[in-house]
Amino acid sequence: MEQFIVSEITKHGYLAIFLLMTVESACIPIPSEAIMLFGGALSAGVVIAGSSVHLNLFVVALVGTLGNLVGAIIAYVIGRTGGRTAVEKWGQYIWLRKKDLSRADTFFAKRGDIAVLVGRILPVIRTFISLPAGIAEMNSFKFILYTVLGSIPWTFALAYIGKTVAGNWQSISQYSTPVSVVFAIIIIGIIAWWYLKRRHNIASSE
Image 1: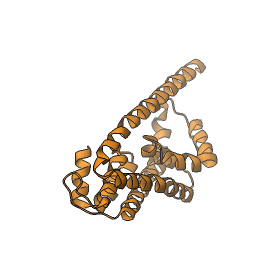
Image 2: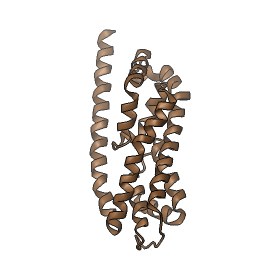
Image 3: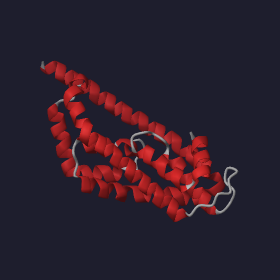
């Protein structure tokens, strides 16, 4: 995956960063760490991974943020227009009921701003947080606002680190991968635990 990212950014520069970050934020797990670190590394003015392309650090971070926002909006719209109907129609097969949607609505109405803001800097969660926000019909203005506020420090920090480490950007990126994997395992474990508990509770109540 990193070779693909390097190849695309080397060929297409800012456009590749924008599109890759858009895809990553639209629920397709492409490592944003590698995207932004390499983009930042190319702003150091040295040959990186055989490429002499020179990008501007601020523009790299800005384009990454915009891509994050566009991808988040895509996932949000999908969740808001089709996700809710899907849950209402087929949610019963995975033990999701209408009252669960009501609880999600209440949660995002009260704490959606924090969930989206913090979720933007957490591995795995940042890729998928927009979908449940859309399903719960979180206020669209707040969703966009907190998506931007959460994305800016993440993209700017990664781009800056990429510029600072320059030729060693790949080593930093490789360290972040195990962290993301561990985080993914924890999230999957929590979902599995919730699923089994919900299944048991519903079966016991019937």
